[in-house]
Length: 354
Image 1 (cartoon, rainbow, N blue to C red):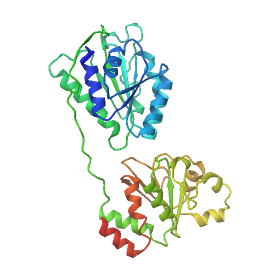
Image 2 (spheres, rainbow, N blue to C red; image 1 turned 90 degrees about the vertical axis):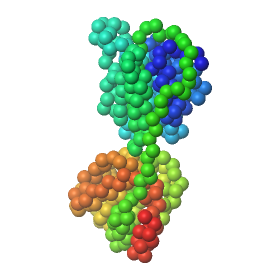
Image 3 (cartoon, rainbow, N blue to C red; image 1 turned 45 degrees about the vertical axis):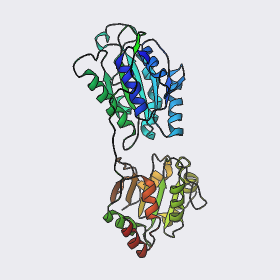
Image 4 (tube, rainbow, N blue to C red; image 1 turned 180 degrees about the vertical axis):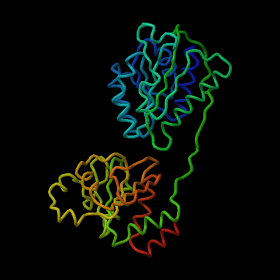
């Protein structure tokens, strides 16, 4: 196949496909010409051209949310990369796998008053899970191996554990438009096998005892993608006499059993009514919680125990004054298990399932 003569760009295009990227949003420039050539020649990559980088990043963000797969964005050198920052920051806190690819000048030209040159390799550092800086010339011993390893590691990080944005900065030297034959899918692919995350039996028992009456439990659901199984499990839990389920609109959970207007409900309750709702344990699941009223109220409840169920992440939103537990599991299987344990008989059943 005829492609760019820049080997690093061909390796990158191969590995994007290998790691599940199907859509690439391109913002054409001069320096990213080799990247555009390499990516546009791959039939497995669907290219979308958006001139404005800020718009391109948000379009890619929406595509990734909709598809559930990583989406790549490609820009030229200089301040073009900085226009990605708002969308990348949102992707970081919403845990969306966005692959940022920026073209760059060779390092020797940085800070030499050459046009469109600035330090790009760590420009998005606070808001990406991982980044790498690919040399302009990789024709040194182990250069191809090193490039493949760096790009594989970054792309794995985008979807590993809690997904999020990553940044690949590719330095490119002139000439930019030369082409040569390249054997596609020849780059070395590194894959990661993640074992299923199951709660230990002891933790299952602990959760089951927590859900069992007369312990008062409040479940607060933050951002989450739509999921029928999770919705059904939350409905079962909400039907228990000692459990209240509060959901935000971004949780994508819907039922008449849920309290889905958190702020408007809490601000109308008297102190006596709030006290009747006061939980012994609050269980949160999913991502960010927006409601200011629920956060202010729960932070001021003494001896509150807080359980957070999601992929590994340090979550201390309610400043629990008693105990705080983090369960590094997806909410769906955990919710499915605990939704059937309102009694001690169910606890024995749950333990047998673990």
